[in-house]
Image (cartoon, rainbow, N blue to C red; front, side, top):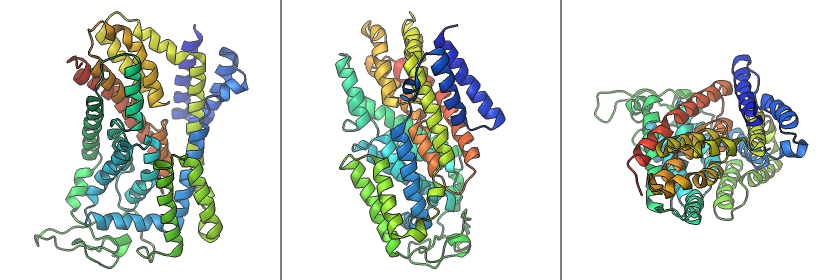
Length: 451
């Protein structure tokens, strides 16, 4: 049995044990990386740790630390209620606002994980307060980020278009952008319906703290700001909203600590999007400053960092790094690329891109797979523009997986929930996306022969 096949089988065993024995998958993956890397691939410790995602570790810790402080001093509550006022109490619009916000951030040049790191904690806090499915809100944030992720001026778009140009393939920046936008918009609409979005519409306008259903000032209602039942504008129906948690007294007031935290969040956005600073290091620095100024609000914040999630993600990605060091990913891609049936090779490459990207860098996978597709693309039997678009969509929509950077950020950002249950939901949803989207992208973008 080849070392590459052994490494894949061990990964399957890790999944089975973690699922059936409730052992942290990250811890299992570290052990597997040690065993496979040392015994099968003959890697030393440096080779095994080459795949450790140090940057993602810092992002997860830094962002969850900063937003734990924001929750402790009531800043996230204030932001949630401000969002309710912005949409005049229409809670059902908030997931779409988050989708559009992350899409706009990535379209103008933000790296997808940076946009998700900024928006996800606010979105998930809103979901917790208003009883919205965290899976719905998390998926809307991630798919929003990917919807704008391939604009001609975006990071992902620039990288992929550069690869296409380097490989001397026909390309279309507009088609690439619109394909990703349309795919993620359709997926977001399906998730919105399946995960209870229509029930949110049925609620109508709710009375959140500091805003009534007509958009004016109102008093907080019981149970965190519903305001109870009241006639709708038509005068017949009544609306009842049941938030997930009670509002703290004085939620709508801006205290010095909240003002400083809001300033810090704005500074994080500017640092990441304008100054191109690391999101994790910036978030930790801002969190330390806030902790020093208001230690009473921040005393428990370090305990609220999502340490089990950090262990999970870092362990799995370290093992994926071992697979990369061993050449397992290249081995699988080259095996598919050598198939003599172009359409079959195309769909298999889309599936490899989706599966591997669920655990690794989306752009890195595209950078490896697009060159593998060049031989049969040059024969003219497959449209290059459609193939590149299909690979781009397949390799990025799966970022809802809890093992990807974006999925991990969503998992870590969700407050006051059963994280193991949410992890399973994200894993199942990510699995569905991996199973369905590559085939759909191939059918829509490759089979018609675009380009």
